[in-house]
Length: 142
Image (cartoon, rainbow, N blue to C red):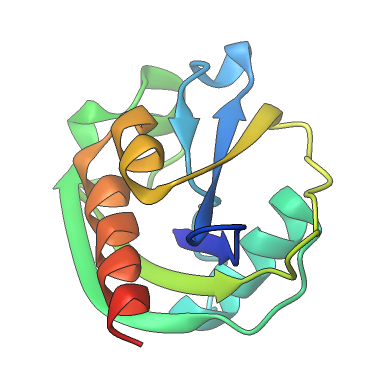
């Protein structure tokens, strides 16, 4: 997953994406699966580009999460390798230009730029919220 931020008028703004109804319609961060032989950072940069059009360096936040594969919808579980019981997730961050807007792919129907607290509260799962809050804290310290 990639926490995308940009400088806002008063504080950093964070990008949240609305997944399409056929993909459960929740708010999330750019994210996706590793391709065979792909490194985490390469996958993060690729997913960022595919889902938003942003070509930017990604910073590894050093955050790793996992959750039970049983939490995934049945159609996604069917695509997992046999015996998969957990899904591993790595968190990255990327800075976007101040006036940049995403070009969404077919997986998404909307986006918002929000302050950290509002963005984190809108996200459905705790892992993206934690990663976003981590980036917000680091930006405050700079």
